[in-house]
Image (tube, rainbow, N blue to C red; front, side, top):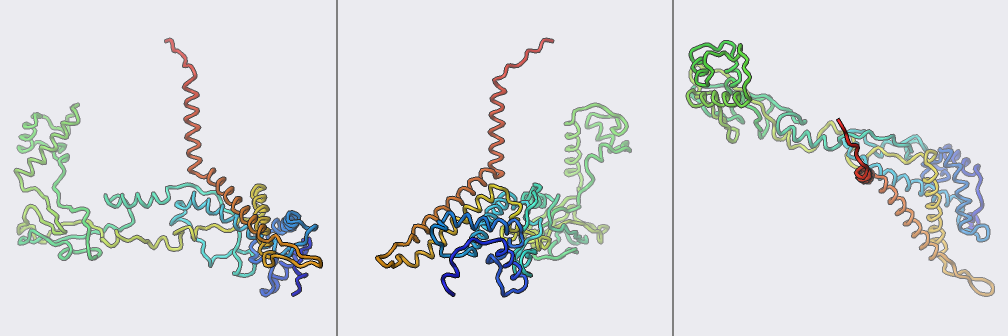
Length: 413
């Protein structure tokens, strides 16, 4: 292909839209940009003409000829827009990833948008504002709640043992009837306790000899607590409950148990009339608690690579964003032109030779790109949620200092 085919001339909107139409008619025909991400966006198509003129004039055209055509500038324009989208998406991910984690449907390579041809082009789209939630803290709280039996995502199963008059110690791992088996059980509750002390001294039928004797011991003779309401300190109830439980433990053979390594020792020792009765317990299967993955998160966001962010819709990018994209396009085009010109350090002329500025163009383009990236990152960091919280804190402290200087009124009653 002759080199003259790549010499720059100002494009028209027909050059861009005509290439889009040809691309739609045949997959073998390429559109105006390499990926065609924004080709269907009318604002991008219109802007591409102005950007081409802007870049060409900044690089010296028409005083100096450019060794590439408008298609190269459009490729730089697409790259600049995509890079801008990347930094914005990274900013959003930094602020909101843990709110999406395990909640939103992930966006993977198999979920392309409608832009471009078939399933070969990645689509664009804007992100809606995120409603904050507890994010990953909710998963952590589930874990803590699971440890005390008030939450979590591991199933709490029920099991039982059948008492025998000849057995006091039972192996819950092997001897019990289990709702779900596992290599290791984690016992949570065993239902072998006697009645609570509170039910004893608020018994509406208090009046038996034992009850009355106990009330006399507590200094409440001839008084039935369930029918007489006496204002007493709360420690009286605590003391009475402790006394009842101590009395049952020492003077009676109270229901109790001892659990060591899932070996359950029953108190009192079962007798003949207890044979066949059951003692129930609740337990976790250790493997369920130790799982680090859950099937209900399948297809949900798991990391920054599949958070549901697409390329930004160019028509919705504001003026400051578009200006950044224009400048980044210029820097990228300058780097590209420098690469082309650096292929030949000098060009022969009839009476001598002329040095090419390829190396300086490459250096300038790369430096300008880095400055633009640093500028955008600095701005995004300044408006992050962390900086917002710091700013509000400083503002509140400053306002408090101002209010502290204001004189207070004197109240005269």
